[in-house]
Image (cartoon, rainbow, N blue to C red; front, top):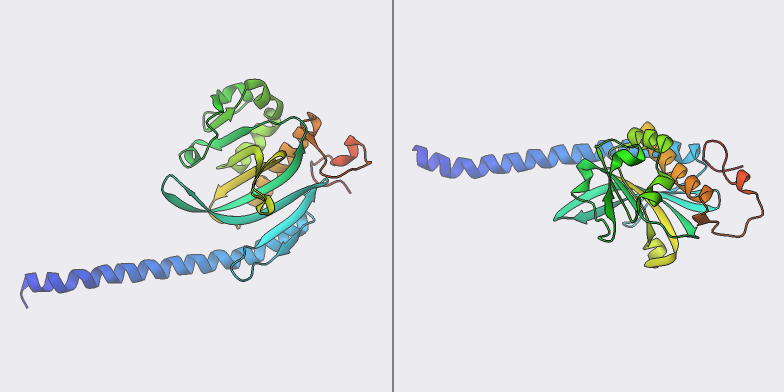
Length: 240
């Protein structure tokens, strides 16, 4: 067989072999990721006093818990931005907004895919205790300063890379955007299956919520007779 004929027949077969190999690698990675998730997510749910609901019929696995009286959720979803489709792990906690505030803190490596409200402008990250590895967007520096500082910078650093947003509620229970209910939304690209990573994200989002309550920017979702000091324990996790 001459060389041209060999190339004509061989190249398609070689390409097919690469495609099959790539499919096997991706399937193997997906199975390993799924098995690790089944091992780690129930442990995480137990640690935060939450409940894991396994997805069925195309639904996502979801962990639901409470931070004080505010509902908290962990799940994964497909995120599309800038012509890219990404699988993300997200944590969300919803609260009643007493004084609306909007803020974005994202790792520089995630900024290209971030969908940032054009009404917000970039704040010098050094002014709120963060390094140049992070981009900060807010309506005003005083709003960013209310929620960011030494404590938050350590938690943000521990949880990176991250995309952290405080914004109007987005499609909670398929109810669209709300002017009265806001959310603290934290996401990472990929499926997070390591317990320390999940805990770092959880400590960051729960501390953000605590600061919103302390600054009187957030109110309880339901009437509650407990004092503000009872609302969170010293770790910023659910009060007993």
